[in-house]
Length: 73
Image (cartoon, rainbow, N blue to C red; front, side, top):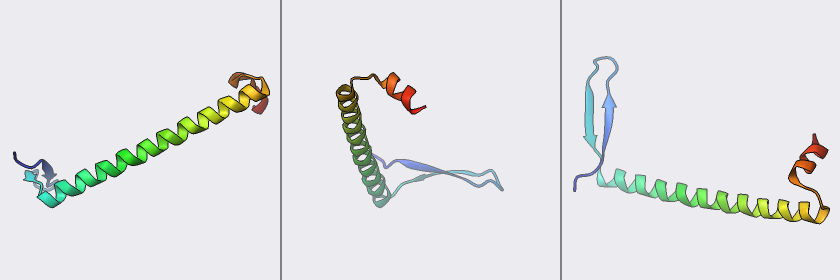
């Protein structure tokens, strides 16, 4: 299976080149995609943790999120 390609456009001449990525470029793209997915998973977990903590606090206070927003406005 051929490697993915990238497109290069020469704006001066209008020439469009489709260039096959090297194995090293493909590996780098896969590494970066993996790191981005890991970062997103960490951000999602942190957001879920914060939402759970916020819900627990609101429950302890006996108020809704709308009521808390009203108090903070």
